[in-house]
Image: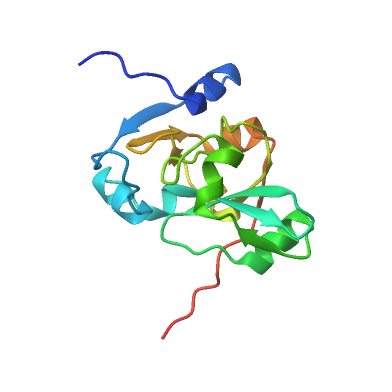
Length: 165
């Protein structure tokens, strides 16, 4: 098997001297896979595999949030974290235009523009976290603090509180 083509995410990490390892997972070409399935297929706990969500604030700015794949983004907490009145999920049709990535392959690193990026505070409790490598079927594994520094990001409690039934 030949050398895997580097993605924008990988080039960004290298340029910013963030050590990473790339991991491939099985997928159907062009079909986004849910994050929990990605974590399982890589043999990783869902708490250390993060999904990248892009939102648009009430003021028109875009914001990037990274949360564990099994969690749900708390839009109110997310808005508070970035000082916005409210944020709404970006429409799937707009993801590529705004980020340069496709749904299911959206990475917090290497987007067309650097947006304000917030990781769920649980990221710092992990030794390593996985985020999309910039295309469906590829994840990159990094030390969370180095990754957050590279995107000039921050952490905040941005997932939905767990309720027990």
